[in-house]
Length: 238
Image (tube, rainbow, N blue to C red; front, side):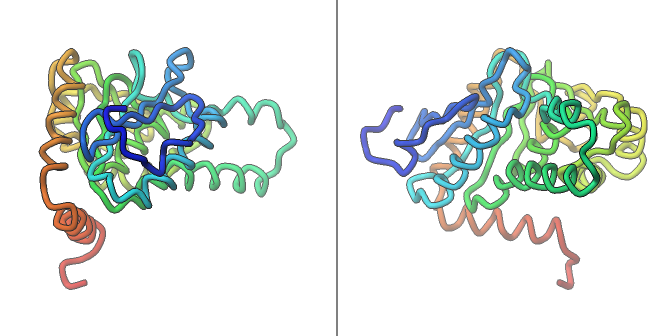
């Protein structure tokens, strides 16, 4: 950490997740389970909730950047537990999956702007995490997809809704029904990401954008975020 000032995140014990403060007002959350391509393990999920809860009340935070360690952003949820519970009924599956979805979408509770820096594949729930952020910047090696249909399931965590709003019905339907991956250039053309940068420059470019946001009035940035989200999610009349 670059700052010696006390923060509400100082005492957090995180597993498969790193919380960094690379500059004043900037927090970087790094999904840190590269051996599993940053799959959302139970430990990572618990750490994510703790980190978001702490950041939500930390007034020193002006912007949050989310990225992945290694060559992947996030390969999605760790679904190995389903195989270990072959007799689990619908209620059991629903209860566990809804808790999982709510945990990762909790980033939407943050009032400050959030930036997803996509350093590699963002798959399934990993894509949904990226779409839950306010700005998405992709490295050239980024790929995006919702391949759940190949496992006999459908995208969760709001994937079908949010992907449709980003790229339109036809492209979202194709991705959800075939499970094909979208590369970074197509994602930029489709409006899924704000811009694509060389993979080697992604960290610096995301940091540059974060510092630009952090330099603005914190209340103004929070109000911009709320206003744009309201415009995105409701009708103009509302």
